[in-house]
Length: 106
Image: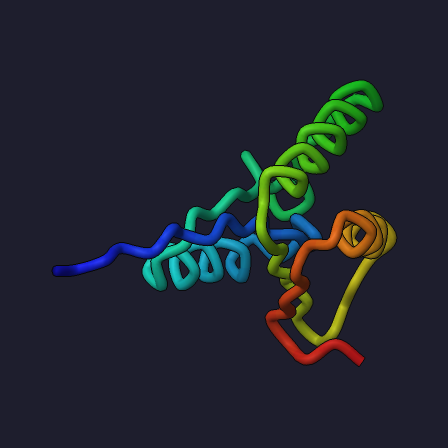
């Protein structure tokens, strides 16, 4: 009898300037059998302007994704972690979520 494990829910965090790295992480984590929550678009990489209200809404939604998750996966090429991502890591840590990094965090 095959027992299928419950998939882990993982939210991807990291600067939206790293669009290709986000997409690669989505693919790899999904193919490893995880449910992946990510950014709906990549405003920094695509040069899309957002209003303050839109940014606040997206930040709120991202925190809800973290709440729904078992873990977060931080996209941090070159070990880059910006202010928003640092706040997401702190939020996830406080919520007791497992934190994983694309590159070893120093």
